[in-house]
Length: 286
Image (cartoon, rainbow, N blue to C red; front, side, top):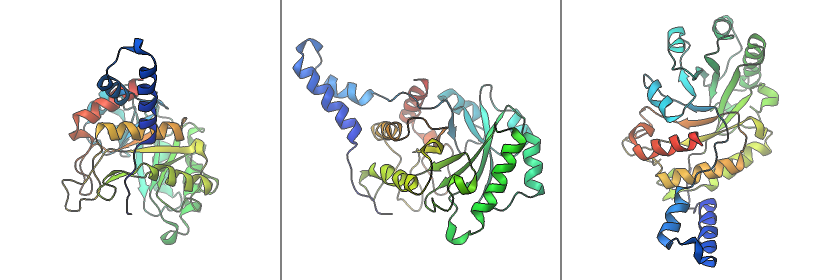
């Protein structure tokens, strides 16, 4: 997973146009420093109203204040009922290697299939075909059951980092596929945003329809862990990431911020950065 340095083209292009335009028109009246700061402050328009964040724990109200509308929850009735107003839950039912819809799974889906507080179900996190050959067909039984019980209202979600062709929606019947390049790392000496283009291109070429793609925003680092490879993005780096995803996937069914709470492999996270929290709040507000 080596990374290489790459300058955010979208941000630099916008800056060049802004500076060039100001130079050609003295009436603009901005100093070069003001022009640079204005370019850095721009954000794309939000591309969806469904903003998901993982590892929330008890901080549901804190993330709602930032503009998140879909919140990571377990299959617990009280946890779902207690979600803040105007938010929904994405119920974690994730498996490393998906199995067929069994009685326990069906019982959970029947319980929540008509709840307006449930947006959908997170069914698998980075499954790999090499160790899970029956997984794609098994996922289809789960996605089909969700669709049938909810009348097509609730979503089925997986995240992939490879095996795109094996787990494409034509086989798995899932409605949303997260693509999760994490471009900011020690290996790239910053952020290599070409990884977003590369991973998305590989997924699309493997049969993942663009309309099902869920952009994943890297809001974690490993500076406070025992294995430091990933870096928490700066505000400018996150802004460039948002611009790139907005250009590549302009109409996603949902976007995904990973994540809020600390894990052994993720520390610091969004909760530690006032700057990133303000940035996401501005972005989601439009």
